[in-house]
Length: 238
Image (cartoon, rainbow, N blue to C red; front, side):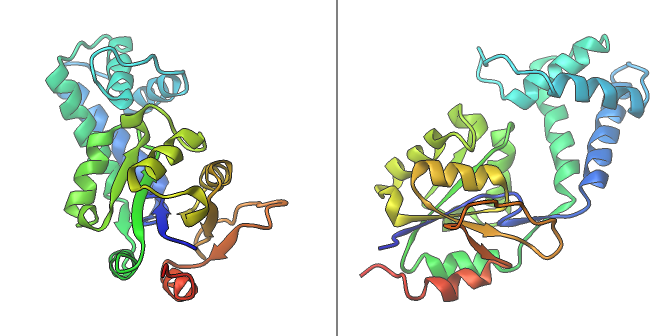
């Protein structure tokens, strides 16, 4: 019996736009900020530093700062700029806000969540290195009240496909893995759900390149969120 529907966020409840443009805006936003703080550097050179830093494993936080903030701090130090904690947080906000402008709420997300909430527990499991941004986004888009639990990798210390983040959501909702469907758009979503014992549902949007699912016959494929409601109508708990 299915009693819970858990969701990924980016690419699932939220729809990607032009992500190359999103990255360009993020880097131009960062470049304007550091130039304003006295560091003369081109967007191209700053992008190179950013890519180098973010490709390295990030050390664990010793002071509660997010991984993204620590990465930005490392970038600034490598270009010879020292920012205080407030400035790093301000820079992080501006960078992710510029990136977020290229991502929209799926128009079916809220109606689907409202429909599912009448019969199922819902939760969000997302990989993101700046948790406060996800929390703000969920409130701004009015998704937060429609979710029984939210787990963000940057806040809990593990990320999909690690099954531990799925187990946390199960513990919080009081559900067993066999009672839960996980809806996502990436191979990490599918692998993590399978590792945790959940039934994965892959949302393959017409605008996105489809994943190679290989020999994964248990994966259900949908094209839009609205398909969930009809499919689950026969899986409501007693």
